[in-house]
Length: 260
Ligand SMILES: N[C@@H](CCC[C@H](N)C(=O)O)C(=O)O
Image 1 (cartoon, helix red, strand yellow):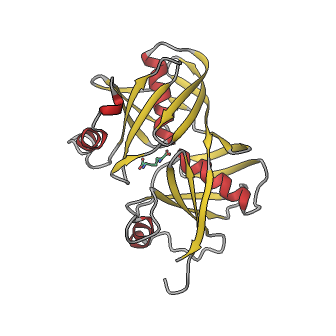
Image 2 (image 1 turned 30 degrees about the horizontal axis):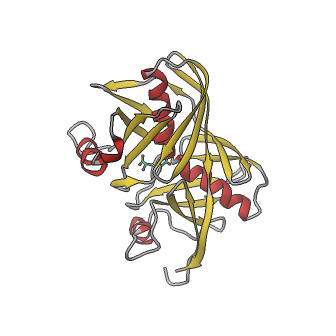
């Protein structure tokens, strides 16, 4: 790419993203090396992922998400919240929106600094030994632990993500600890970043669902999830293995913009 690329940087609870307004379609979404270079924290702008905001019929916009490794990814919850703030800042939407992402339609509303994002319904959880495996738009492995502050999340997450079962497709690995206030503390090793990130929205959502199963919580629930980069709130209706009206709420903030 010869001419300069305009971008904005946003973060949602410390999960950080490069946002590109691609309504003219100039950005080549098959350019894995470009996305990887832009996300590189030493040679590029630096981010956990990159998103293109594109025009699409019947929706306010389309979200196209790439992991930091340059590959187009599955759903990103914090990315979804950040692209909603970006669309508001571009003047495309006001407080409410409906947009299209890789896993389908998402609706969201903005309440000052918080973006409240509708997520896909989940029908069923699986087990891998003591851990839960739940797909909330992206696949997640959820393991309940004690003393999460001192857990070597990179080493333990790397081992699970790269074991024989998950190596090919990859999985996001979440470690969860119950807190005394009814909430949970979650740390995540993210596939595609291949490292621990400061937050993962689909991971926090999966962790809240696993907590509902693990601790027998039914009905209409709002579960606070603390992550290294801030505070998220997950709500849903749980009936057995069915999770409906799933929402992910938390901060989504502009950081800086530039040309590269
Ligand atoms: N950060 C994300 C998840 C992004 C996708 C993930 N890296 C994957 O490949 O599954 C989130 O906030 O949900």
